[in-house]
Amino acid sequence: MCVTFFTLAQPGFKLILAFNRDEFFDRPTLPADWHNFAPSPTANGSATPLTPTVLSGLDRGKAEGGTWLGISRNLKVGLLTNIVRYPAEDGIKPLSPPPSRGKLLREFLLPSSSSQAPSSGDVQSYISSHLPTAGNYEGFNLLLFSLSPSLPSPSVGYLTNRPKPASLNLDHLSRKTGEDRGCTGLSNGPLETVDKWPKVESGEGRMGQTLKEWEEKEEGVDALVERMYDVLSPTIPVHSDDDLLHTTTVQPVKLSPQMTIIPSSASSSSQGRWKGTRTATVILVHDNGKVVYVERDIWELGENGDPQKGNGERRFEFSGDVE
Image (cartoon, rainbow, N blue to C red; front, side):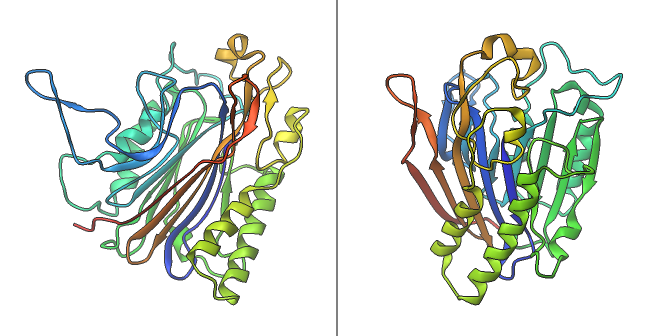
């Protein structure tokens, strides 16, 4: 039950983004770091070291080795959430077995054959190329950003396959003004729904209000990072699916057959496993291309197999490539 809040309209920044990753605590995962997803083989089969170009955590639950959130050195940002509670329309059915949704981000974040900075059409063309096959996957939201300072404005696109494959050009979000700071939230339902989940609606409001306060108090970057973590922090105990619509940080919950957060394809193997918010990530991309990326551990499995609060943090700062 991941959730994210972001804005492209805060003065001084191309993007401010906060993201909670909710996942099985025992799913193999690597913490955020620089990488290329996998080594590149040479003609003789050995691996050639390459300069790492992607900063993200890594999902090792499937052989494809994708991610849920990441940023590249040339300032492409992508995130992925699954979709629950929204069935596909008749005729929309994933392949068996379905392909990994994480590869949609992997392919976007890795550099193309050209070393040039992304053009404003890269996001939209990438999404358009995957629209015809979006129904092959289990339910997902894919949100992509191209933020290179060489572009006149950010390019933003969205792809989903529930209730049917559809895409949106979201470039207009960078031009929003007003008290809400253009803050947008997304969780495990489609972006365009009649009724927003309560935690999405309340989180958008919290983000807009705290950005206003941060600006008025003339606070620094570290304070902004902490404010974004506060946006992600509201939590209530989870006893039913409905509680998941309200809690932003998901406390550890041992799954039962009554909870639809269990994917139908894996429900039998998910019984009794712990799930909740594993990590929270804040990404700040300044107008000049400077990036601050912070990932914190929220919940994890202890040595005895029971959940315990995490205390690890990874912080990265770099300047994006503009050529």
